[in-house]
View 1 (cartoon, rainbow, N blue to C red):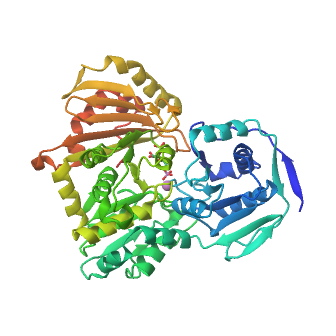
View 2 (view 1 turned 135 degrees about the vertical axis):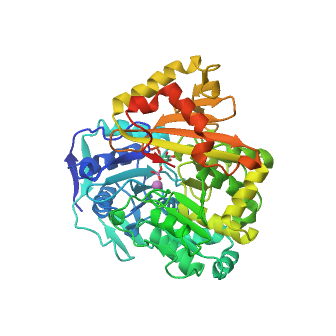
Length: 544
Ligand code: VG1
Ligand code: CO
């Protein structure tokens, strides 16, 4: 085996504080670009003798090429065994499952999640540790630092490995195992849920279901679990073939991008339950017939009904949500008398809480829900959880949500995204807002008066690590709240996200349009921060 040490120059592709590198495919195709990041990962985490690494991605354009490079680099850097999904495929939650099940040191996951794919689209890479979760900030910042001083990377000379046949072979001195990307994950799901009850539900003539895989990675997983193991009719999973450019679509499961599913749910042929997931399979959207279930509500409903599911029969240790997520789950936690944690945006902040046994379920408003069965959010898991709850309660999803609102009250929630802004003015907008936070309490904007305002800071209850400036929060006197932060996952310009939530306990006011219900809060934030004016926009680009 010939190990090459190739000279390279430092690069600063990765933003500090982000869990990986997410850039355009074109940027990734630059010489040494991917290699630099991968070497920075290996140098940072350190590879010990006998260790296993997991490798796979969401199948988007450049996935296969990147896997060949990373496999050769893993061999050159002393990885003993590489587990790679057949076809280079592993959904993000499945990669987390495989890392944990096989006691791997960690895994490299290739995805830009819900960002569009194809030669002109985006690509991404991140490292997950031995718990199966995204590396914590201390590690990602060390990777970033290493990429700034890198001088050489190591790679072996070799031809491409065959990714399309499940087999075991060696690459240099490294053992390679091309594994079925679905089997471990499907087995885990069967161990968590009551497949018998769910199969009986799916077999009812009146119960129809549609899962939109959006031409992304979840297709093969959903076909295996929903159609083969639970017996749903063939065709239940639509857009099931993963494609390198997601069929030209945008693999983001929301009302805008999953329009095919939304049309089916609102069509003449009633579909009782609908769901979709994103590029790498960690996000989910769930729908009832003509009924959208907000992800914040979804988390709360799953928490409230968890003991109906075998894996959670003994109750939940605690729950957590990201700060911008509505407080619906907090109310459930209060009722159950279990702790509820509020973390910064991003799944990596849940890892410590799960490892320490402090929480069982957690979620984010951005269509992310998960539990301690893996250390990533898990789209298909959330869909199966809903199916299990529907089977046990023998009610359609919309009735389950309405019952929930009646019992706990309704938390209206919406997110407004302003995309493709110029970076500097967007940062300035937030800086100006921060500078005025102390002066806001007591001031009135439209119908609302500010009670309190701050910039969210987090101290990890397990390792006491701290994260500052995680988003501006403004609390109003009617109990509503507005949050503003900048996205950390975009690849071009800046995206400003504004989040709004308001609590309603009057049953007569629980069926308002969401934007209508939140109007006072939306208007108050605009009066405070002048978002529309300063961004030069009439309104947000995407409303979810
Ligand atoms: C977004 C979401 C955040 C999520 C992250 C990764 O981040 O808001 O909740 O954890 O994407 O999701 P940001 O910084 O753009 O707001 V995924 O599906 O890309 O792993
Ligand atoms: Co994703």
